[in-house]
Image (cartoon, rainbow, N blue to C red; front, side, top):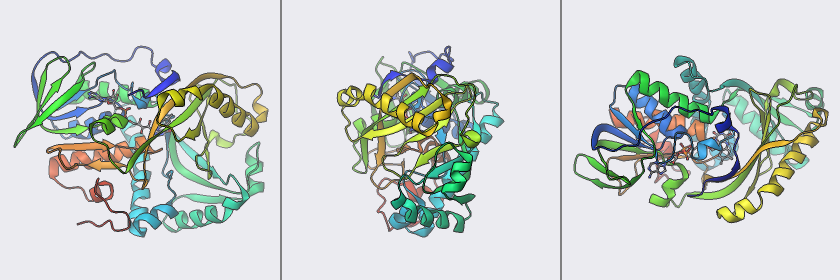
Length: 410
Ligand SMILES: Cc1cc2nc3c(=O)[nH]c(=O)nc-3n(C[C@H](O)[C@H](O)[C@H](O)COP(=O)(O)OP(=O)(O)OC[C@H]3O[C@@H](n4cnc5c(N)ncnc54)[C@H](O)[C@@H]3O)c2cc1C
């Protein structure tokens, strides 16, 4: 699948990533993980930490799929507001989803500290602004719900916003407890640490092309004619999993992002907090540890890579203009990096995590949606528990056959 086009920011921040051999032998393991992006890396973390004999295979190189295009924002709030989650799935499930996302943001920070990973993880506050006056009512309702359920949020009016920023907006929710990071470094550094400290075996340039499910085990075949025999497998192949089995809840569109040159300071940008808005599709902005601004959004409904890429230069200009409008005090801004990418979501707004009919002994970690890294962390926790204990109390939320509004533990 053609996942993205353009000049990506993150691979330039790690010019010599750790290298792994291609598999050229027949091997065995307890669990095979297919895919070396953030999802595969995080699933490997939870399994190897429990002593499970794990092999990870990647057909490109580590982090070279959608993970390389990921803007690196880690949020508790989602593309789908808490209000909307509760409408779709009921109060208990909607709130539980937001709580899981919140703990996953800090869990990623904990993993980076535990393994001393150089992944540029930073705690961040976040400003979620009303794009238009008409959004104020629903924004206030969202604020009240978040506050009622114990999330650290404040409501900011136009005056408070313009005191802290070089722009004004009709209203905003200011929240604590989010983060940003470098997804390419995270996947590379995490897999490197797991191989050296926890016995993970990783192979790149190793593509799985088919598998056979036996009663108690699976046999996978690679493009270069090796086999991997495993008791279980996790399919963490990102949007390309739709080529293996199309899920009616999943859909692919196009998105755009750019990164500016390195700046000296950020006047008019309180706390360098994360920024996003109520409009759909939304615009989002963050800064990086090397003082760039990453701006993204302007999504388009097409999933055709040619159509996606034909709009890239125009989208880059538009994203740059939006950043200039918000932060006129920053002076001349240039787009040193810009890219277009395929972006996957689900119709009901929850990621797809768990087993699927017709794939015995296999589990899928499909963190579709704007919070894909957070979902991948949740996927690692749930799937490692399903594999080692046969149960996880939150697995029902993300199962493939979930009916919205009627989710139950059974
Ligand atoms: C522009 C953009 C911005 C985004 N911003 C954010 C953000 O700010 N925050 C956030 O949380 N999420 C964001 N996302 C979403 C996030 O990028 C994804 O959810 C996440 O990176 C997906 O990781 P993954 O490991 O599931 O997939 P991938 O990174 O695509 O990894 C899957 C891997 O599987 C490999 N593979 C596929 N098939 C096979 C096979 N048969 N055999 C072997 N290997 C195989 C691929 O080569 C690939 O490396 C963004 C996405 C885009 C496009």
